[in-house]
Length: 160
Image 1 (cartoon, rainbow, N blue to C red):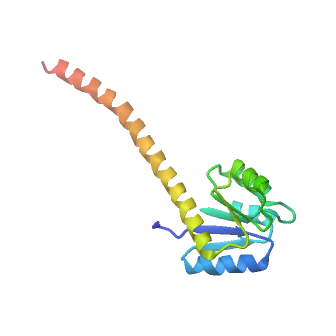
Image 2 (cartoon, helix red, strand yellow):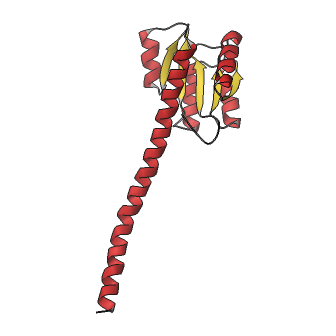
Image 3 (cartoon, rainbow, N blue to C red):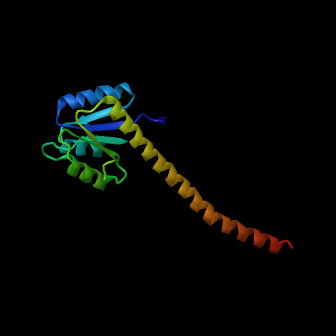
């Protein structure tokens, strides 16, 4: 995955050990990482920063991961969120994905698994951005072709 600027990640988890592990690993991959210990702090940091990805625990004090994700989506509906939890159930996984989580990771997780999920999520975000650019170009061409046809007809009529 190559981008012009480093990928900025916000890690939100109430477990210091998980935050430290993810910060160390993601920094080693070249990501710029900030952390928050709960959803409220995560929301505050998100509004102050420009993050490409949010990795958040599902179960935290003050504001859980689902509520945080809902708040983030109100700020930017394209926010990429990876949800992690130590208490996996089919219901929570379905709810997280239904509410917009890009992916769902269960604890304990491997660092390779985290990297794969991040690459997949960021890749999907970049692909959506490229698709929007192509769609914009297509609309521009669609509107400019009739304009050039009209100009051509007018010029042909004027110089006949």
